[in-house]
Length: 79
Image (tube, rainbow, N blue to C red; front, side):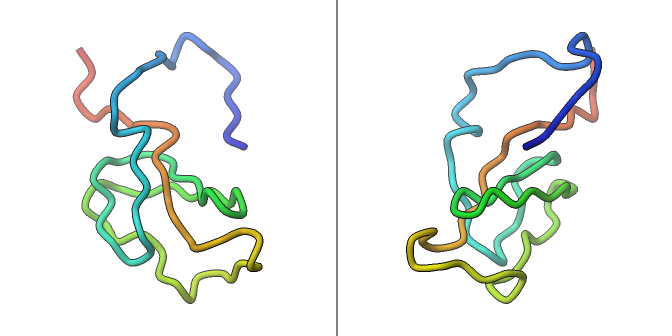
């Protein structure tokens, strides 16, 4: 699970980007931390870079398919 020390550096969002799953080997639409929804493995990735492929790690049948979900968005253009 992603951790943080200073909550002042994060803000909560209800944007639909946090509800979308992305398949292995697809492009990351946003920079940030992505979580595998089956096994809870997490990765950091830049926008447009390719999410880890199917061969990155294996799942049990109970974990289902590998699907990455954005859990922390990295804003490159702070206001």
